[in-house]
Image (cartoon, rainbow, N blue to C red; front, side, top):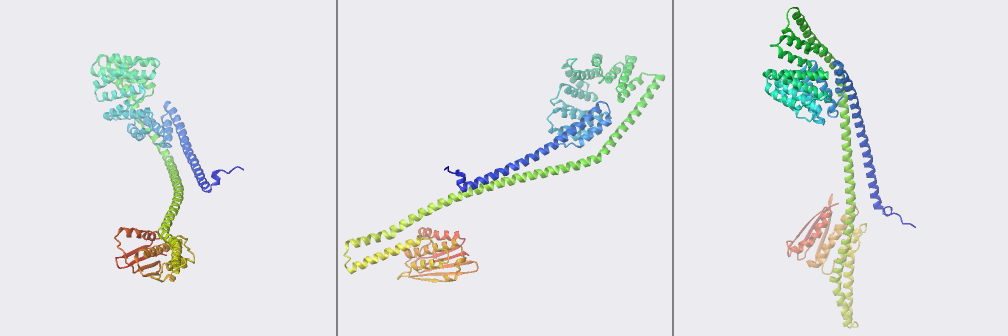
Length: 590
């Protein structure tokens, strides 16, 4: 027949195995619930990102078709459902798009405020192009608000980022424009010349080519302001690049610069370039471009033509103001319409944050609970093994000590008596009454000592026979040479006293009587028992020769009594002196 597995055969190990399996099962359930909650949160975040991107894409389409009010509507709707820390990229992108729309309407202060909202969240975005866009937009805001020092600061921050060459070129161009506004033409020239020298025209690189056209045109304006003859070539080169690319980006400004250049020496050509700039601005529906070019046309016009251009100029200014007001009002209406939605979104976001916080707390509490449970189980298991091991060790030590003690007693108390008795029986004539009497006395002494050793090491009864055993112990030490007085032992309800305490008291009295018999030479011993409300008091007194308690050998011998009493939470007071007997006061709780 096969033997059962050891784990199932050993009940203790089986119990620990079951506890371990339950712990592992609980941990698995906890991990399952934890990952389930995490996946739900990730799904919510993913769903939010999808909706934000959908709204942003719609906004981009309207932006590209110059439908700024509709673009603003969708950008604003997208940013309202963003959690800035979770959807940092989407949040920054939507706000930067709104800021650019505000720039288009000439509302640079509002654009600056919008951009400022994004600054704390740039650290959460790895792609530097978003930071570049924010810094560049803010620099343009400061430029248009004539705060050129701050504009320069933001353009420099944009330049330091690791972005594409055309983005870096744009920021350098914008920095040069800020220097031009400060009339730092030499600084702007040096910057633009470095930028222009790094550019090679390519028909396959439209974005960089357009940016180069801006660079060379702005460089020409610096040359013009510094009286450098290279100005005209730079203006014409910029014009040529834009013609090749069929691009209107910066074309109006290019014509304005040429108009400035010819204003003194060739007013007719200056007017012609101004009119070309006006037509370009009208074509791309740039009101500010039309106003700036008409301003130049008016300076070189006369008569009815002058009147016509002035009326058109006034109309454009009025229309521009009205359009800006209308657009601002539309934006304000859209924002107002979203106030309630924003409040509702904030409430939902707060609710979501509370739920997430609650979930995090529950998760933390669960983890702590499992850690505590695991620690308790480990502690209990370790403690059980330790106590079992300690108990077995103590039992072995107790058995060993008991064997040593019994062996010593047998050697010290019986070996000599047995040897003398054997010698007597061998060498004396037992037919003589005197020798026979001596032999019987020796055998009686051997029997008495053997019985005492047996009693000292026998099991102590702790039931209703305890008082009988205790009396028997005390009477066993009474001889013809001493008297033992026992007082109050019957007044104690021994059945109500703990088993361990009864054993301890038995051993203490036994030890006191053994010491009395060996050392004190007392002829009177009094053991008095007394019961109080919560304690039992035992007074031991003998009239022996006493001991010096300061003597180490005696002191160490009494430590067993002290340790036993302390083990049952009692107290002991020992008093003695040479020639004054020996007293012990014992008190322990019931």
